Length: 143
Image (cartoon, rainbow, N blue to C red; front, side):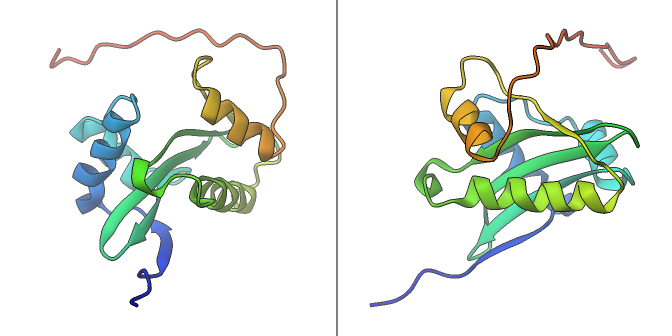
């Protein structure tokens, strides 16, 4: 009997975009455009963590800090790797990464109908704060 390859959590690299975008699309999340991905890769206070197993990216999460507040969002785990604690590990590592940047309070962004995501956030100690988040897409010159 062969054992599964070990799971490694690491910072995403520019070449991970296709695999990460595939995870996000499968999870119902928007993929990053090339410009957005590049911004995530070079941003000093933003980043993407990935969980990799046997050369395959099986999960990803974005973390960002503006120097005051921190955010965790776009967490996706491949369907065949769910319920193994990978999402919890990624969130915990993202929290540590944000803590090292000086963040002391983190928000998670989860769609209100994503019951699995809401349950995961609750398991990780996140509580509703009563804020309503409004969103607006900004068009780029190319659009």
